[in-house]
Image (cartoon, rainbow, N blue to C red):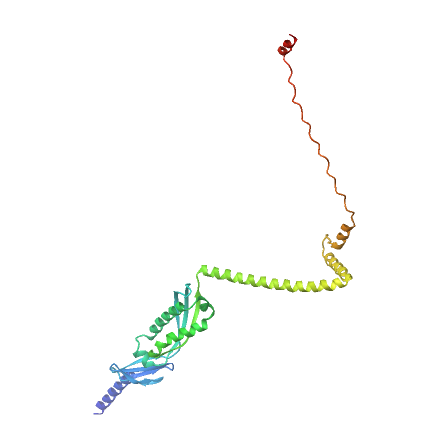
Length: 286
């Protein structure tokens, strides 16, 4: 009798151990458990830690609640100003409703990826090239709103969307480089012209001051000679005053105008006489 009781107790203990092993589940801190009992969703979402279900009756689905980083493949499209570009992005999202993520959509990761690609192509078509290159924050906000609107019903919250890279055709890159070079050249010319204007004003003021003191001009001439002579060369440039040249021109006596010479009429030449032949001479004697 005792042996039967011991055997029955051992069998019950083994059955209980098997039941506990089949029913016990461990949910991690960053996970939530959704239980289906005979295919029907249980309203209670299991939290992290140790939990138990009914074997062969309940089915536990674990859902990761961490933020997922999903790269969006590069999408090629035409902007509003008819430029072909390739744009890729990255989406950060996490699950906030474990039951909705399991029940409302078959695969929420795949659904978010497809929605991100579609929204990215739509953003490319609605934007201009300058916005894609310089106004990315506004485009990121619009892209996040487009993805987040349907994802809320799936129990998914879009944390952030960032446009990573914008690839342009080589012809467009060369055109933009030429445009930037022309703009820099224009600014350089404006700066140079402004500098020349300021220098001309200062030179005009210096000339006005030197005109009042003639000795200042001579001192400036000597400074220029010293500056040129300081260089190690064999050429020395000495400026010659223009006023001295004008004084020498005025000091020269005026030259008398040259009288025109009479022109000699050429004499008409007589035609040369031809020599007479012997027959003509005999006829004259006759």
